[in-house]
Image (cartoon, rainbow over all chains, first blue to last red; front, side, top):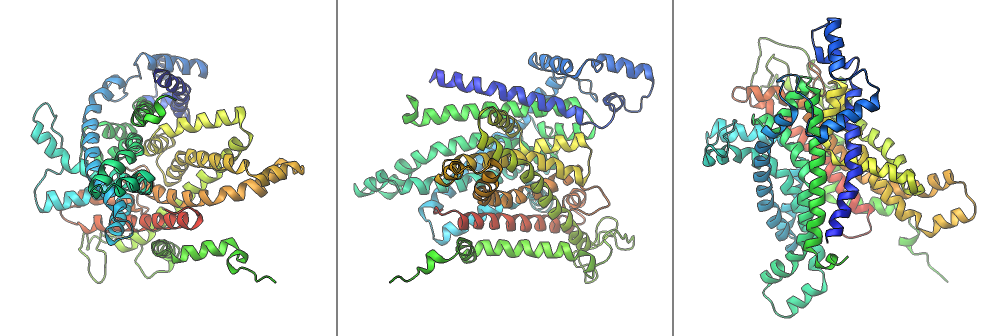
Length: 314
Length: 287
């Protein structure tokens, strides 16, 4: 088991290195002189030279890359051009907000997606299954930022039930924090719920055909017990892996959701950075999300092995 | 004496087509997609006002006979902007997926067929690119390339490329092991011929399914980028940027936010249904 985890970590290292190369080369995509972009209105040659020296832009590109990676490894992702704050600090500040949103969205997705998937598999071919599939496909097709806008219109503007925007830290007022986050989390969770439903359904369909399910039924077990205890337990493995892999989708969805509900999280940070041409922040965010995704992948693999006893000895 | 079996003698394509036609939801998807394609193509000849024409006498007017979908914050006809916006959305979907397929399929074939170092390099790069969330990557690329519809399409296309590399590579690996490829090699066919005549056609069906589903994702991605201001630039109409403006007038003009969202939803649903139907028709396994 330990050697398996170690092996997975070793495989992840070259991938992370490659990502760092990609993220670094992003800034080389910038049209024109990056110093001009950094300096903004400033055109004084002395200032430009100073900036060039400060960001070591006179070094050969490979050296620039090594300097950048070396700093990144020490947790230094550069300084935000707008706020003059270290990028790492900015990310650390915004991340908990997005994590709260993501966790609540995953809860919504699990609570809606898994039961819907189970029911739809058990009732395969019936009207229930058909309706569940249509709803799931609609969940996948609806742009979540539009869903957010419509919910604001209905729940906040018309019914005045929940606040349309804002954020209250969990530590400050837990109840208010959760109620403010309900609508955004639901919006973010719908697409995930749809994906989860479809995967749960197909995993369950596969398992329900297996011999041990037939045996369980032949033994005269109650259908509910057969489905939940025998079938679902085994369908769970791919579902757990998938949930971890949805991390990427979640972060991307958070960008738009946070934008609509003006939540000061990770996603809002990246959009603001893009508009402020705060390239160090954009790079830092891409790097952090990509590495986060790889870590989630790793955890998913480990969970997969832990949940599947047959793989444990391998 | 033998009677030709009608099922065996029929060309496989027609069997696929028959299966596809019997697939009700796929046909619905096809109709939805066809509807929007027609509208986008017919935009110049449809009897609607100029999508850029402002009318300060009719600002944020609710739907009427003259403006069936209402007007926007500077008195432009929402219906006309919706119709012209279909062009941006479909173009973005098709062009970006085109980029992803044109880059991804050859790379996937090379990686899968030749294996070894080539495969290792391509596969590691693919994994690295797949690690960055699709939309984050597209946002970052659009940000560095500069905001415009063309750059948004390039950004979305590049972000979707790794999906096609990985899919094609996996498909090539399984096709490569088939006897007919071994025979082709045994009779001394040159590699390019094996690749184009035997490998490529067998890789195509899953790529087609994935491409259809990715168009759906790409259309949402374009709408998202335009919503964030990184796609189609005003005053050119796009459903995403219309939603961006609309969110500031939710109280006064809710119709501005309704139509673009419904349109995105329907066209994306169309491509998703079509993709699901194609998969069922092309895949002999039962779903």
